[in-house]
Image: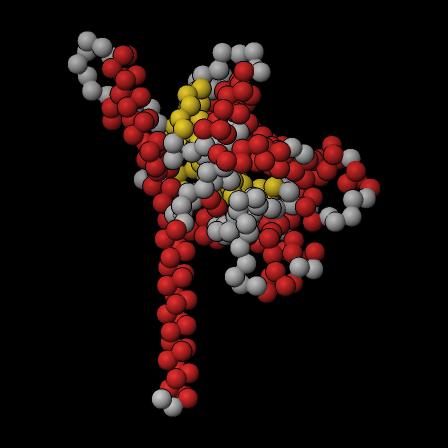
Length: 311
């Protein structure tokens, strides 16, 4: 066989093998659970200032909105936290008097969340579901039917279709760990009330590039095959870009009402000087710049709140 034909055959074989490898890698993707590293997750994500900044921005964004929504509706809210992890925000909302459903695929993560509720001296209205979000809908439907039957016993009415939906659905740091993140939008559509709001917080892939540019990790950025070792690392290998999330929201007729960046400068400061040594000052400045252009788009995570446009 002539050398040029042999080379062509080898090239085709290499391309085929590469495509097969890519297809297999996509087929092997599954929704991520942190069950095996729940302790590591708790320490790494919320064991220091990074977690304090994250919670401070989310509290500011969500609590202001829920207080106003509850006032307008004249009642406590019905809230769902999907892929809740340690569920700090959801637990605090329950402590404010709202009815909360907390879900995660990891039993260990929810056990930690339950331990946190035990430290609060209040009779919190929380329901817990350990399952993938794809299985949550059936569980919710069964519970809603049971509640309706109890409330309307003897009436013969079937109120399944009128069972209460959620005024607020939160999904924080979940999209980047789903095998098919866009698919969750249909779930949101079915579970969110007409007047409801969606709180999406997700890893910002632009921050990965920017931080490595600052740190001089050019070899890593040049390596298109680089993947974090997710057995240990909490850096997602399949983050979803802001533009993609915005396109999903538009396609599902949501209107963005608020955007914030989480950790817009803290992670980019290799030298801690001046105010960087004062955690309260860092949080104050993070809050100040979290909603300002262009700084918010540098956040390691982005938070979008949106309401659905109902025809």
